[in-house]
Length: 418
Image (tube, rainbow, N blue to C red; front, top):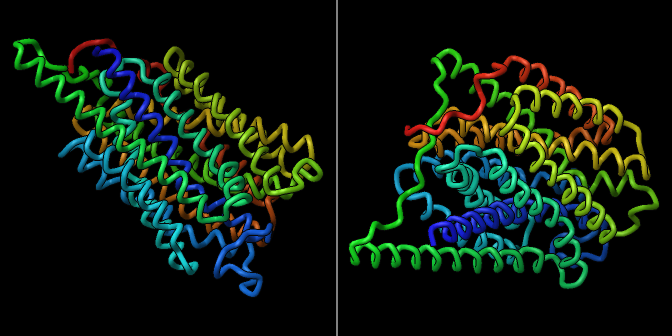
């Protein structure tokens, strides 16, 4: 029974990661459809607005800022109140926010809906990731599996959004996944109540109730080394977030421009985007295994170095070559995602781990929010050639920072009580 409960809990956490990324990225594809004027019936967004893709993406900036900033109070509440309770709020709240967004009648109302979606979506990362690694000695593969679900959400968002827009209009692109998220949240709440009722029956029968997952100790690092490692984690997470957001948010538009005859419609762009992102997300499993069994510094440096090379290669590519290189650099971008989370899990103690994740994600998602207007400005002036050049420099800086990590002291801790 205990193993079953842990597996089902893990499944719900994985579904939460999927919805978190899916719902926040719906508008990214809606904006492409509006800018392309692909038979999208959107009141207020008519041709006389004369809004470009660069104009449209700015409406989501506040939502992505909230997606980062609200991670800190979410992590604090989870550590002080209940991680399970906060995840319940996340499922029900973020789903409801997406549905409310569908009722927008003006661009500013749409922006308000995205803001609310971002505020509630901010709960997941500091709380969900702390729950994923609770009681686990080797955290790389569980975090990687959880990351795959998140990235499947990233991959599915443009495809499902374009399909829903094409068949039912833009409002359905918010309503359908919002309802699915809320229903999953309702199932999560019911499952937790069933578990608590079982624990009460066990206690009444004189048997031990369900024990909380054992704490796995943080690595013993002196203060100076702890500060150095955290500084590297936050620095690389910030730049990595810029690269992740740039690639995932802009990929539909990149394919719209660079795939030439391979993507001739909105649905074709959606399918290509989904295929690339879904395939690339599997890299996290490989990287998760590698960081559980090998030097984090070596794995991290290899991933960052390959990113830099691939972004330079992508500068002027189009057609089939661009598609192949896009698959390669997305493999590296997604592969990097679990590494920072593994490092935090190894050096942060359980009682303040949600807050440590919260700080990491506040920084990451604030950078992601800044990335949106940056994409708009760079694309408007230099196209994606300029954006790939900036990302190549960023990946190079990550490589240099990672080389400052200790080589052997960040391996998996021995299984002793905290």
